[in-house]
Amino acid sequence: MLNVRSAEERPTGRDRTPVADQTARARIRDAAVLRFATDGFGASVRAIAKDAGVSPGLVMHHFGSKDALRELCDEHVLARIRELKNENIDHAAAGGNFLQTFASAEENAPILGYVLRSMQDGSALAREFVDHMIRDAVQYTEHAVATGLAVPSRDEAARARYLTLSALGALLLEVTLDPPEDPSDLVAILNRFMAASYLPLLELYTEGFLTTRRMLDDYLMYVTDPPDRTAAAESA
Image (cartoon, rainbow, N blue to C red):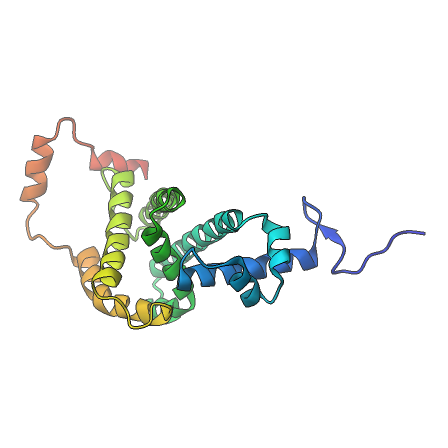
């Protein structure tokens, strides 16, 4: 007789992992992202397992170690950031209402908390995480240029790096110099940061800051073989 399995037990995908196991892995991953975001990367496997409604043994069965679980969380968070950035760019380029994006931002508060904890951690893995964010930023700023939402840069990689580090640095300083009453209240942290930062951020991005380009022209005269913005625009 054929060995017929239930839908939950039937192997799927390249790794032939049962559907129920894939669901458990996703649940553990999401619980780990939230726990790391609220408590930092010192959070225990036991706490993550409790949040996910599974045993610590099952966490280790799926991931082998907490470091391996964190690496998967890094990949998931980076992918989610890329997805959100590109969605926001397409939404804005199509004339969408920014307030809709603003209102839904609270749903992604754990992502912000996770990024903040990564910067505070300061480990080699945290550095790699931020480096990935910078490389991803190059792609979605180029996407913004391609959709007509953003002007091209003479050096897209340098601009993406500056914008990423500026945003992360502002967030880190905000939380470090004026710590929230409840560090685990990620929504409150996000709301406070957005309330303090979004008006000046949007003004700078939309209207600029300087009334003359003299400083830029002086700099381009000073720099040997400056990058060509026209060439960058044609490339985009």
